[in-house]
Length: 614
Ligand code: HGA
Image (cartoon, rainbow, N blue to C red; front, side, top):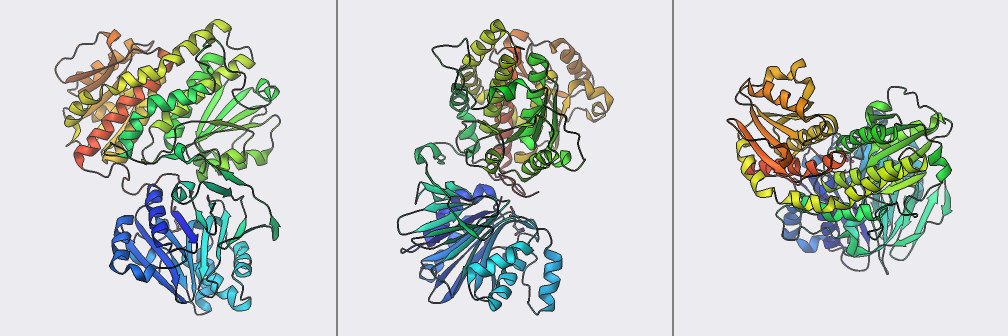
């Protein structure tokens, strides 16, 4: 969520900040702002709306923002409406602050500050931080010391970037629960909430640990943990792997949908050698095999789309390995005092690896210290908090996902989860050689099947015309397709703003059937699988009530369109992997409906990527 960029350099940094914000816009986009120190003053500009509004405002007087040190922010509001006065940076005296996260105890801190005579110009929790540092600086006129005094007073999870007019050579940053990296340059240094923001200026990064406070100047970086200076290594990344360009595509989402065959192939390569598709690669999953052998229960923790991936994995784990698997929304799990059974594998799924709810649920689980607990992070960012705090890292090789609606992250999560099921199944002798060979053979075909499913684009676009004026929609699936029905509904609502619900088709008669009439579009995921006949009966129930059916069916199903029924035939795929392939048509459907309705596909209203607040 909220994006932070900061720079201290010899050159003018305004454009570096603005370019960084553009690259971070996926994280939050209700307002944006920047502050540059120039001629002993803070020069600040803030605008509601997209980063472009800020760029335009800065262009009116660019020389005003010519400076060598500054901080910038793109906001996703938690405290106070999206408005100019609430946009960051927030200023107190000569201090400016940008903030990602929430200061939970801001109300009491605010009261104290009001009593001391500080005036508030915003409704944000962030402004208390600016005033607190200002207040501490009065006692200790050293910015680093002032920040160190204030940090323990703040409850919650946050990342901060701070500058002071009287220290025009130093940038202070704090990381406590929200992501922050330091970009290391030559004679210049930077901060950002995602390294993506800094790729135009460096490919060398220092990753801070929770609780770190850093003092950054042009040619030095000092990091402190609990008041003691510590060393954090500098990592060089291959910037070409992080291409975040839209290329020939109109939207990131479409580009990312089309990248799925390659992304899934990359993910599968971790475990499958194309010259040997009958066994898993020996180097797949760096972990202690004895740990895997001892697992007796799987607990998946995730949110949103990742939660749907976990639901598919539950079917796979239970079907293929007979290990019990529970899947829970992280934000619910952590607040219900859950029982974590001994010898559990906790799988945390998150594209960014920074999802606050998932991280907190993991930490709560670890605090319970059940015997034989093994934790695994399934995520797309190797340097993320989730990866650092778990025993095993299972990467997805999706590449950066910029569209807020997750697509390639989801299908690569599914591919990686299937590999994990196989690995555990083989380690525990729960999957025999023959089954393994069959499944690996099917996985090997998957990128090709995904590629073929992209050929449905034109017919799905045509189908989407029926949805343009709709206000509500149902998605139905059974068995392995039920989570895909949920995912289809989530995609449609988040980017087209049409109300949509996903249902297990067998549940229809227990309530939602009451909604069905001639105006209700019903999307059905209908591969020819073991649930197909049951699903056909559910479709009849809809048809008899004049509902309009939009069916994604396999050719093998031999379904024939009739009145009020539209069919798009999906390429053949084995039942167990069908959820991966059937994800593509529901993504394309949502995409085209959203484009037709003119919504902001990549940055839908009220949402942001990488949900780093609770
Ligand atoms: N609480 C601050 C920052 C919000 C944030 O980090 N969102 O991701 C605000 O509301 O401005």
